[in-house]
Structure formats: C-alpha cells, structure tokens
Length: 152
Ligand code: ATP
Ligand code: MG
Image 1: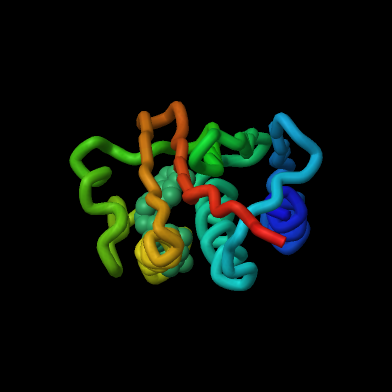
Image 2: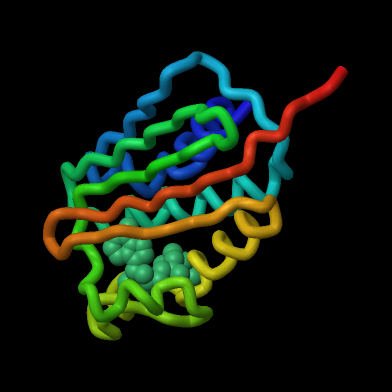
C-alpha cells in the first residue's frame, strides 16, 4: 500500500520537519493505493525526495504529496514551497554528487547522491522521476510507477 508507505516515511522524517514547523499533507483520491514495488527501495526513494522537500524548504513551509492512480500508472507528486532550483541547475540535478550552489548546499550538508539514488530505484521499477522548480516559489518532484496488475 503506497499510502501506508508514504505515512511511514513522513513519520520517519518527523524529527526533521516538526522543529521547522512545516506541514506535510497527503492528498489522495483513495484511502489505499495498492501497487507492486520493492518496499525498502521505494522507502529510500521517498525519504530522499520528501527529505529534500523538508531540507530545502524554510520554516513554516508546506509540503503536499499528491497520489493518484491512472489507468497505467501510479503518480506521486511531492510539492514544496521552498527555495527552488535555478533553471541552469535543473538539467543536472540527478547527476551523482551534483549539488546546487555550493555555498547554500554546504550550509545544509549532504552528498548530492539522494536524487541520483532515487532515480535509479524508480527506473529499476520501470518508472520515471522528473523535477520542476521555480526559484523562491518551490519544487515539484513527479514519480511515475507503472501499474502492475496483481493476479491472485
Ligand atoms: P543528499 O541527499 O545526498 O544528502 P543533497 O540533498 O544535496 O544530498 P540530492 O538529494 O541529490 O543531494 O539533491 C541535489 C541538489 O538538488 C541539492 O543539493 C539541492 O541543491 C537540490 N534540491 C533537491 N531537492 C530540492 C528541493 N526540493 N528544493 C530545492 N532544491 C532541491
Ligand atoms: Mg537530498
């Protein structure tokens, strides 16, 4: 159940976002969204992506996770109201060790591996991950996972 996993990831990130007074909201059409995926790998993906939203969004910021089931895929959108990413960096953001603006990144810490790992795991599931961003407005990461029909 994808929604269960998302809730669990939010709980694991509690010590990061609670002190910043941020709100994380899940917006989903259904109460359960069952799909076939590697639970531990997908947890790593979501911790990395939601963790970024928390890390790169200032205090009082809002993070919204939209989850929807399409005929052929499960779509997750992780939206934040954070600092955003300049256009010139967006194309390189999934590269290993790539971090935007060394000064701000150094202040926040990290290796620059989070998104690259997330992309590898999502692609290993046959899905894809994309990022859209506007500086000072926020960032949206979209993860698409192919719907796998479960036969009994
Ligand atoms: P790590 O995840 O390995 O601890 P990191 O967060 O720097 O380090 P990535 O998660 O790969 O590495 O992200 C790469 C860069 O993309 C970050 O350094 C940051 O500048 C930028 N970035 C990622 N997500 C966001 C976001 N939601 N808002 C703003 N910038 C982001
Ligand atoms: Mg990261």
